[in-house]
Structures are given as structure tokens and as C-alpha cells.
Image (cartoon, rainbow, N blue to C red; front, side):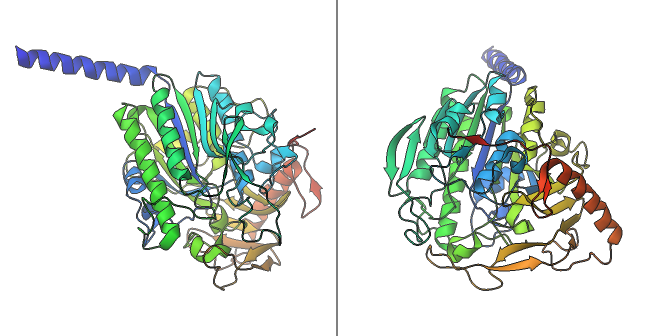
Length: 471
């Protein structure tokens, strides 16, 4: 009889758990790092950085090996994630400086605002970098709670080029709309962001939530807590990645402990590639070419892991190209939300994630930089570059101990074409061998220029929208 009662209780518990999962909208967690290289995870080939939690997440989830940032720099990339738009469409360029008169326009619908319409609680913990004026802060863009810094962690008086190229004021730490501290030591910030994220999950476990964890690390200056100091074979940079991996483990464990694991989609990626001029304080994009600040593969192709047990495939690798602008429409499809009324550029790639198809809904992806320069296009296995200058170390070593080495500049003098399936490192220009491919991609680019413009060709797009401004 006792055994029968035990079975009955177990059956009832399982039924209730199953019913909760089927009735409740899935939670959404985006974990975004800053300036992390394509190779800087064990599951993406790192030879000397241990990332056991992220590797397990990849083993039990999906690896996206052709996932792109919307642009190879901080603010623009984050704008792509939160709005589903190419950053130049909405007037966000480069990395916004402190006291910027521009920010994310309130007329744009963010991922947080979209999810709020479906009853989601929303929180951001970490780096914002879409305008630091009060009207641009997260609570005015759909987030219920915010803890973190308003822009990059090097925008402070301790910048190595302070007084030479920059004149930064104190780095503020925000709690919602209030500055609660100014930072002179960032060694506890990853831990604090993790603790706040765990608290947010526990406080909102009964309702669907959207949690955006935007780690300021491993952007320079590098900081790590004593828990991981000196632990990595890769030096301080490796220590920082190990602590981020620990943070991911804490988040995943919290989901398990609160029976939320099978009803939560977790997305891990980076905003752009490594800042190579910082040398031993920078990540690695190998086997990709170049890094942050370029439209080359090392600047915009990022590690990306999807984790949604019981819904997404386990241990799957997807090579089809995608971009962070696709996250918003894909999540909208998942939760049954309406897309923003303003035109967006992202597409729903849920069928790619689940393995239903291998065909991208995007005809091509466009790589803009600076204010509005179309530098390149990804089309199927091809990557085409238009004439433009780009920064490079040109084989020279990067800086040491947090001080950058100077870049030099090279130029694509003519159109270049690479077959990324055969040449992931972009070593051999095959434009002359495939003139029909060049013509096909150039025609696509001409259509995009009519829409978004191109400062390199003096074409002004018809469909761009201005950023918000401070009056």
C-alpha cells in the first residue's frame, strides 16, 4: 500500500510539473559577453581556457557556428539584439560615449517591451551602452529592473590613454535610475551581476521572465574576483572567462533548483570579436581573420550556444548563418508576441534552431561599419567585401598588461570574395574565379543601399530612422 501511495504521489507531481511547463510561457535568458573571441570557449576550440559549464551547455544544447553580431562594436551590436534591426537603420553607430546626446530612440520597440505585452517580468544586469541620459536608460525601454554600468567599463578616469586621447569622468554603478556608487575596482562586478540575476530568477519564477545578463567582461580593463585569480593557463584573460563560465553555471543551477530548466530558453553569445590591440588582455578569434572593429569574420562571427532542454536538439551543431538581429523575431514566434510596428531586419529562425530546415530565411547578411558604410555581405557560403579601409596589427604583437598596441590600416582596393566553407580564415580572394557570384551579391548590395544607404558610395537610404536625442 505504501508503495502504491508513493507511486500515486510521484505521478501527481510529474503531472503537475508537466502541466506547468505546457501552460506557462517560456522564460528567456540572454547572456551577452563583451569583446569575447570566437575561440574563447572549450566547445569552440580554446586550447587553454576551461569553460566546463558552457561546454556542458553546448553538449546538451545547440552550437551556432555561423552566428554574427550586427556590427563589430558595442552599442551598435546591442541595438541589433534589442530591436531586431541593423544598427544603422535606427541611427546607432559605434560605441556611444558618456554624456552622449544620442541613444536608443523611445519610438523603437525593444525585446523587453515586446515581452512585457505578454506578461513578462524583465530585468537587465550588467552593461547597457545605448545612451546614458535618463530618457535612454533601461527602465524607459521596457525593463522593470536594472543593475549595472551605463557604458563600457574602460570609460573611466583609469583608462590607459586618459589625458592623451580621453577625459573620462567617474564610472557610475546604477540601481534602476539611481547612481548608487562610482567604481574604482571592478573585481566584484561579475559576482554582483550573477547574484542579482539569481535573485531575479527566484523572485519571478511563478511568472514568465526575460533576463538580460550583459557582462562588462572580458572588455578591458580586465577584472576578476579572488575566486578565479591565477586559475587559468591563459593568464588574466582566461581567469575572466572562467569566472563568466562559473556565472553561467550558477544561473543554470538556479533554473534546475527551481524546476525552470525545461521551460527556459538560454542564449549565450558575445557582442563582437576580440580587441586584438590589447594583446595578452584580448581574446582569440582563431581561425578567423582580424577582430573587433572590422567587418572581417573575426570581428563579427561570435560563439553562440542555445540551451532549451526537451525542446531544442541535444548536442547539435548548426552551420547555417544567422545574426543577432534574428533573436527578437524568433523569440516573438516562440512566445506568440506581435512584432514591432516599425520595420525590422531580423527573421524568425526557429525552424533552423529545431533542425526542421537548414535554409536561412535571410537572403543575405549585410556588414555595415562607421556611420553607414557597407563593408561586406555574407551570402550562403560566400563573403564579399567592397573597397574599404580596416584596422589591423598586420602580424605585429598586441599590447601587454592592459596597454594597447597601435593599429595600422590596410585597404581592400577592389572587391574581394572568399569561400568560407573552404577558407574560413579568408586567405584567398576568389573574386576573379567567380564573377557571377560577385555580380549576384553586388546586386543584392545595391538593393540594400537603396534601403539603408552607403556612405562609401554616397547613396542615402530611404528607410533609415534617427536615434533618440537629448533636448
